[in-house]
Length: 100
Image 1 (cartoon, rainbow, N blue to C red):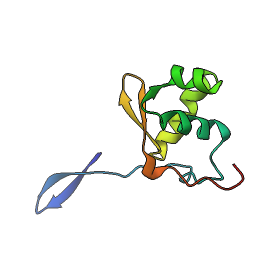
Image 2 (cartoon, one colour):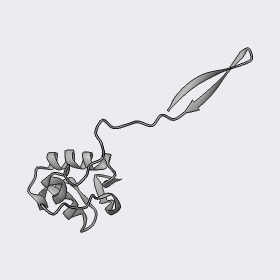
Image 3 (spheres, rainbow, N blue to C red):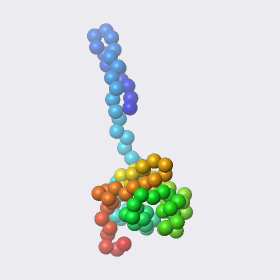
Image 4 (cartoon, rainbow, N blue to C red):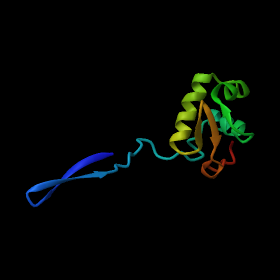
């Protein structure tokens, strides 16, 4: 959010405007998804989970799972619910390519 002053006669009117932040990386498609991402999606298909639980189920470290959850969150594939819980947004999950 930012503020800009607009000249109105001899005075200025402050207006507030929203700036849409763009991400440096495009939205992930099936080819961009890593094996870990698909494993996270598979766990979250069973319901809400936190990074340590996902790490235990997938065999990846909790830190790596948190990194991948952050990337998946950027593309709205997962949604943080607070207190470390994540939920899958199934509408945003790319369709798996036949090679996976």
